[in-house]
Image 1 (cartoon, rainbow, N blue to C red):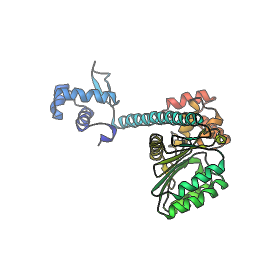
Image 2 (cartoon, helix red, strand yellow; image 1 turned 90 degrees about the vertical axis):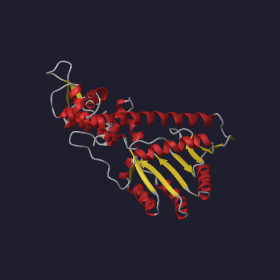
Image 3 (tube, rainbow, N blue to C red; image 1 turned 30 degrees about the vertical axis):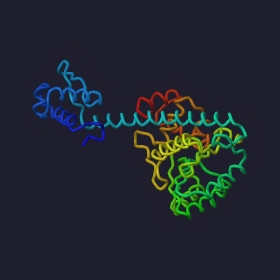
Length: 328
């Protein structure tokens, strides 16, 4: 029953044996569970590590079982902390990948060397996209940050996407959660899914990314300065890394037709938690709004709401209270 929380059958049996409150030492517990004393000790150590056992206040040196309700809450909190840690590691990796690509591109300005081509200007990028789309055979992967997309961008993408979808090319795209509030972008995403495409959203995304047939990728030279243009690469190592980045982002995203989880009575929604995490890391409101694809007004409104819920008079105090509640 508790295998999903990292407990094997023997460890769960020991926990059940401790829950019934029957007195006795390791030897008696081993007999009741049907295992050896050394295996019981290993299970006890694991249960202490997971927070399912705690020192007894009645028996010196003894242990008592945490109630099932409190125990499950501890296990869920641990899983949430691990997910947060992985999200942070992923964000660091995304930033490092973006910096590496930008540095690599600037080392070869206006050249076409080692399977990498620099594309300067929207016309150059659009021309390359047209060629790559026409040659698509199996799959197109895209990460589209920045929240709501402009009408010009959507209209430029429509004929290319339609060509690929008509040829039964598998198309997967990840937008930012904030596009759910933009009718034009949602309508375009729905148009895509009606023709066989797959669309998901995530609260925070890496830089814009396109991968064609797992062999060619286009990424911005500098995500913060679109005027520098983009890099089109067929380098197997770079493309493989970008595909891995996309798959990680895709797995963490939510299908467009799925409603994002709402905040529990005494908790936070995924979007609010991401905002708290970004601001706690030292990001300004402006930087956080760019990462989340929302306006600064939205960031400040959400933060004001969170401070009110936390009964905090400053952001510093809000951060402390959020951490104490396990929201960070």
